[in-house]
Every structure is written in structure tokens, then in C-alpha cells.
Length: 177
Image (cartoon, rainbow, N blue to C red; front, side, top):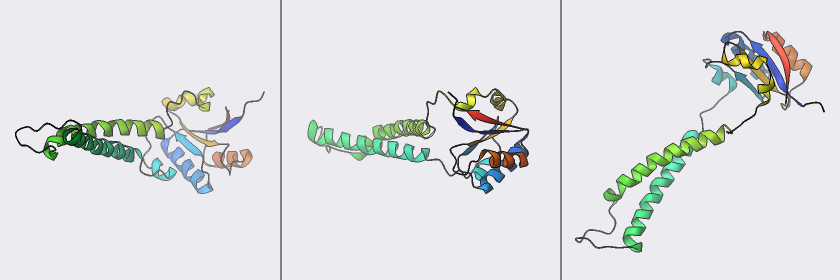
């Protein structure tokens, strides 16, 4: 059984070269592509069209939910579930409930940020087709790779190969799943 092709891997020697290639790939209209680098490349996120992360929204929802939920829980327990009149004080006092609610807000926000990061990055991903490629191991040392997936609507092996060669790729290879 022949393995299914995953994408075309292009190898580059410098951050400037992979940045120029990413611009060409973006301008060609590809949608399913990625760049792998041993360190962050300044400006690559703009070229790839990345927007702000949604992780902050996860933290906001989790933290806000915990704060409101804990305030409601304290109010319910003090006013209805187990009311104890102590020295004529009110059954619910917002300043008294603020400290535990704030602590839960911080804790739940941290949990929400973690859950959001894991969900949006699709972790745990224990396997990726690029791990089979022997040259891809150099991405953690000194090489830069641009991968265009075969699932991209514009992908045509000959045209994509010509585009990446014209972008200055030093090595091209078809990765399989």
C-alpha cells in the first residue's frame, strides 16, 4: 500500500530566505502551509496572516465564570442554604465575598489559558507526518522549512515545486503520511 502524500517540504538556509518564500507562497494564494524554524523569525507572523490568539478569551470566560459563580454560591449559601445571623450583620456582604471570588478568578483564568492553549494547538498530537522525514530533524538546529500541504486547494505538485524552487529552496521533498 502506497502512503498518502502529506505535503511538499522546502528547505532554506536563512531566516530571510524563508521569509521571502513565505511571502511568495502567501501571494500565490495558498491556505494550508506552515513554516518551521529553530527560532522565531521577526515578521513571519504578519506574512502568514496570524491574528491575535483566542487564548485570552478562554481565560476571560473561565475567570469571569468562576468569579460570578463563586459570588452566587456564597450569596446562596449565606442567604438561603444555611443562614446564620451573627451580630445583626447582613446575610451577604460583597466585600467579604470578594477575596475568595478573586482568588478563584485568578485560578480559573490560569486554567482557562492552559485549556485554551491545549485546545487551539490541538494537543496532545503524538504524531506528525513530518517526523518521518530525516532532513526535518535539522529544523531544531539550523535549517528553515516551509511545508505546503497536499490538502490545499491550489496544490499541484509540479506548479508548487516550481514556485518553491523559484523562491530559493535548497532542497525539495514530498513528505508522506
